[in-house]
Image (cartoon, rainbow, N blue to C red; front, side, top):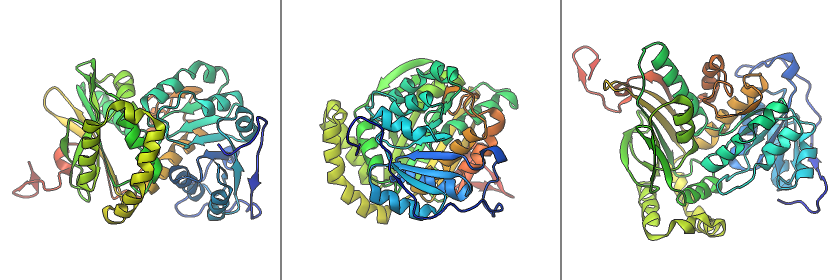
Amino acid sequence: MAMAGGGASLHLINPKPTIPPMACAPGTIQLPEKIRNSKVLVLGGTGRVGGSTAISLSKLCPDLRILIGGRNRDKGAAMVATLGGNSEFAEVDIDNVNSLEATLNDCDLVVHAAGPFQQTHKCSVLEAAINTKTAYVDVCDDTSYAQLAKTFKDRAVAANVPAITTGGIYPGVSNVMAAELVRLARSENKLEPERLRFYYYTAGTGGAGPTILATSFLLLGEEVVAYNKGKEIKLKPYTGMLNIDFGRGIGKRDVYLLNLPEVKSAHEILGIPTVSARFGTAPFFWNWGMEAMTSLLPMEYFRDKNKVQQLVQLFDPIVRALDGFAGERVSMRVDLEFPNGRNTIGLFSHKSLSVSVGTATAAFALAVLEGSTKPGVWFPEEPEGIAVEAREVLLKRGSQGTFNFVMNKPAWMVETNPKELGLGIYV
């Protein structure tokens, strides 16, 4: 990134003196004394996802020291001004090991939000975190990167470093929702699930900016990995459309197959034989456009980051303009189905992806700081990643601001227009 030379380089901006710790205000979280003043580096902190995470952490835990890592000093100064006295900006190059490790040496936790993660073939930030014994969370949404991160597990264990990969909203909170649905089915209902489906909807870019646009295009260059009765299958991206009811405030939306990391991790960790993930957006013609591009352009086209960046530059102004009409709403529906025909779901709906992704990522960051994660590199649904007893707290924190959050209910209870018979009886 914007860093010259091969040596360590760190530039800090802090326009205000540090504010002394204050009494816990309404809506904030009182962390234990030993971690209350922890220093958290948010890489990509001047972007939409990283900036949202930093704001959420600052609001939830004002005593945390937030270090914004990014390339643009002006944007960094603006973010520091937004956050206030307990924040600084660090101009840091994530591709420069010396620079990165110099920044991490003084940090307790790093949140890696400098995406996109697609077609990134090394885990520089995770490796630096292990070398400096710094706890780690990333918001990766790419299968290959997530699997590569997992190969650092033994090194993280040896260094006593807790690390979570795919710790955002989806994947992230959605994985924990799935894990809880499966646990409750097996422990309370004595049922063995046979199918797990992740459904996601975002209006426009959800206010998350060009990074999510680049991610969407890059995913069109990946075959979709899904599982059917225990067998791995590969499918064409943005096919297999289903019309899914996301409940009140969202309604029914078309969603399409995409290659997302929670499919493989949930299949292997939760032991569900049939797993898939689908995504859809609005206005509806964006879905048509994505379908058309997968039909007209070869997959190799979307594997070229330069070509994808050209597409982003072309479409970003149009998408931004339409975001004003489409809104920023986001919804996740996690469906768990059983051989006897029964099902149970989790549902998460928020008016703004750009806000909720920060809230979700902050929830993972706090869980790691509080000691819910064991040394190693873990997916959110692994009990070593987020301890079973810590899941309820994480979901409560991660779902703050939602207008609809439901867990472990039959699907008909979230139908937009359920049929009513007699005195409040639905079928």
